[in-house]
Length: 113
Length: 338
Image (cartoon, rainbow over all chains, first blue to last red; front, side, top):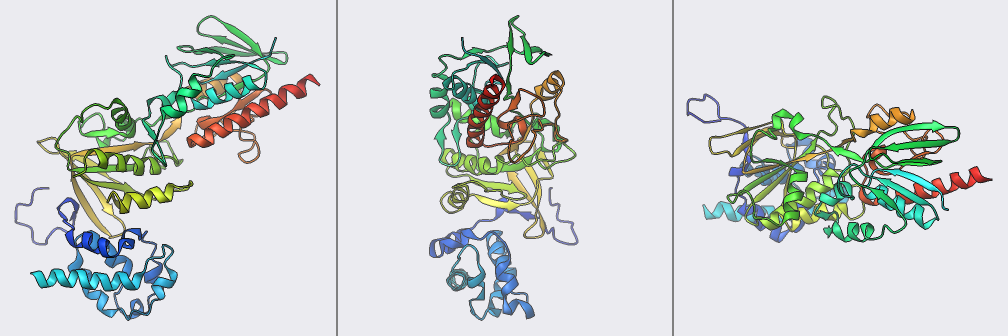
C-alpha cells in the first residue's frame, strides 16, 4: 500500500524485502548454527532470565532476521549466560557462543554509526 | 500361456508393478490415458532429496517393457464382473478377461486457480511447482529476467477444507525446499522466501536438505500462510502473510511466486470406483482394506491398488508399494488355483 504520509500511527507491517541483513550475514559467518534455529521455544521456556524479564532468545534470533534488532537487542542484557538454553536446544546450537557473537557483531554495528 | 493382469495407470506405480508381475510370470496389460507413459514423473526435472534427474529412474523403467502389453491414449470403457473374472473393455475396442486388476491411477495436481486469492492464471508472475519443473526440464531461458525476490507458497490446496482437500500432500514441503535451492542456483542474486505452516521433513535426508537450504543457499523461511496476492502496475506482486513467529503482518514485494500445488484424487478415481463398486474415503482417494497391513488390497475380490491412488505418496513409497502389490496379486492368483 502506498504510504501518503498522513498516518497517525506507523504501520506495523513488516516489509520484509526492505530488510538488508549484512550484520546477520556476519553473525552466520561467526556462528553458522544461528541458521539452525527452528523456533521451538525450548530456550525461552528454560530461560531463568526470561521468568523475570522479556529476554527470549528465540525472539532475538527472529528479530535479527527481520531487521528489528533495536527492539530486542537490549533484552540480551538480561542473559546471565547460565547455559540452560544450550542444554535444552534440540538443534545443538551453541547458544553461549551465539549470544556472545550477537553481542560482538551488533555492538560493532553500533560503533560504526 | 501366461495369465493376464490388467494394470490401470501408466505412472511409476503402474510401470513398476507391471515389470514385477512380468518377472513373476504374468502378462500385464498396462493402460494409460495420456499419450506417454510415466505420469507426473515424466514431466518432473529432478528429485528430492539428492537432486537426481527424474529421467535416470524413468528411462530405464520405460526401456524395460518387454513382455508387457501397454496401451497409451487409452481409457477404460467399462469393467464388469463375470463369474469369478473381471471383463475390462478399453476405449480402443479391445477387451480383456482377467482375475486381477491393479489400480495405479495416482493423483491429479490441485488446480491452483481454485485458490483465486493467489492469482494463478490471473497474474503472469504467479506459477506452480509443476510449471517450475517444466521450465527446469526445458532448459529454456527464464521468462522474466529481473527476478530479485522469489516466494514459495506451501500448502496450496493442501490441508484446506474449503478447497475440498483436508489432507496433507506430504511431498510439497521438501519439493519446495528442493525447488528453492534450484531457483537460487538459476538466480544467485535473488532472495528466496518460503511461506509455510509446518515444515514436514519426514524422510531420510529431508531435514539435511532443509538445513542446507538455510545454511548454504540462504533460503529464508517464514511461518505463515499467504492470505492474498495482488499485482502492481509493473506486474510485480504484493504478497500478504502474517509472520506468525514474529506476530506481525508482513508484506513482500516479489518478482516471482511459486505455488506448491498439492495432490488431489485423480479424476478417474470416482469413475473407476463406481465401475468396480469399491469405496473411496472422505478425501476421495481409494480406500484399502487396511491402511496398515494391506494398503494395496481393496474390499473386492481381485481389485488391488498401488501408489498415490490411495493417498499422497513419495516416489520411493510408490515404487515399493508397486512391488508389494505385484506380490499380493501373485499370492491371490496362486491361492485361486489351489
